[in-house]
Amino acid sequence: MNRRDFHRLGTIVLGGLIKLAVAVPAAAFLLNPLRKPGTAAEADVFEGLVALSQLKVGVPESFGIVRDQVDAWVKYPKEPAGAVWLVRQPEGAEPAVIAYSAECPHLGCAINLADDAKHFICPCHTSAFDLEGKPQNFVPPRPMDRLDVELSKDADPMVRVRFQRFRTLAEEKIPLA
Ligand code: FES
Image (cartoon, rainbow, N blue to C red):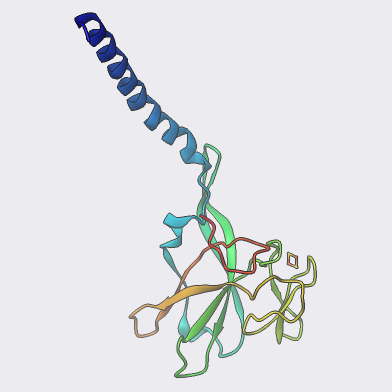
């Protein structure tokens, strides 16, 4: 390799490195707004929803999840992001509270408590679940999605839930990335 070739090669390599140094942060900046709430980073957050003493054993109660939402490049603080159903278990049971996502595993509509309060229903395509989240017909592809729950150390513990979204129409519970 003569001196001229060596300089040409050096220029090409240096130019490539400079382009890479500019392109990688630019791509990360442009793609960042496309990340949605309910993704891995937010999935690590436990949110306090209610004091344990406020829940009645075996009586499901619904709680809204409020989050900062990102729509393309715009951030909307404190927007409704979903809902969960909490069911307090009998004294001594572990866990003390079971949390279900209110998002239907069929196509994502909101799951409600039936009028008799003995099962859950989804009005969109008639999915039905018992109070343990098990399907009662063949519409939903899987049980209601259980969420992680923890209790705070307070005398009257706070029920804290890790809200997550999962893929619809899947037989397995697959977190949305
Ligand atoms: S979305 Fe719930 S039954 Fe279809």
